Image (cartoon, rainbow, N blue to C red; front, side, top):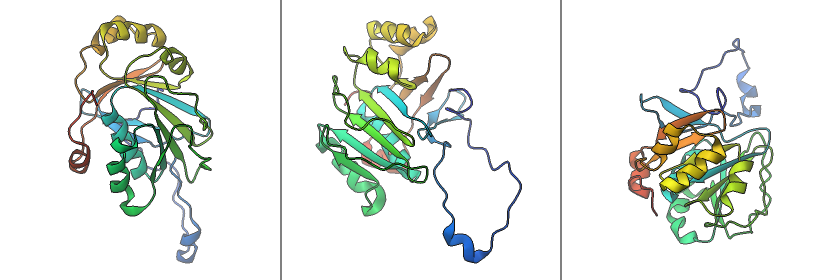
Length: 235
């Protein structure tokens, strides 16, 4: 995760300048790369940026609340990526889908097991959010180049260890002390982080791999707060 998963803001172009005739501008394609989505700020107020789009399959597990998953959906769609939500509770996503994109289908809803092939490319990346409860079935659509899959788990469950072990990135919000110890074993977290997991405030997420970790406090914009309310761990 170091260097490519989280960045303190976005770096500008590091290459020499290039000139292009004005009549060639229409042929340009500016794909969303791995610059990522601002998921929050660290304790020093620095932006924490998470890259969802990769040229290889990329799986993310978020052990946390619906609110955070919905903020990530909105912000990912705001980068120009497509977001497909696989859920058994479409009623909690409907307002967000209708509000996003101004009528464009940048976020789409699908029943569990009914996500169609999305045709992800470097110029049209996709994030699939699986909101399928404590025991999500194996997905019909898996992660692929430029198509990442984020699985939302409200709490740890018997399937969580399998999903966590297979994930490239894991986000953990407030959990019980027993769950914190289990996550600590799975992710090889130091004791200080294990102890912190049961005391995290609403909107705080520990994003980690087995070699790196970052805390991020997600604070909604005015538009996000108007649509989703304030940060909360419980749905």
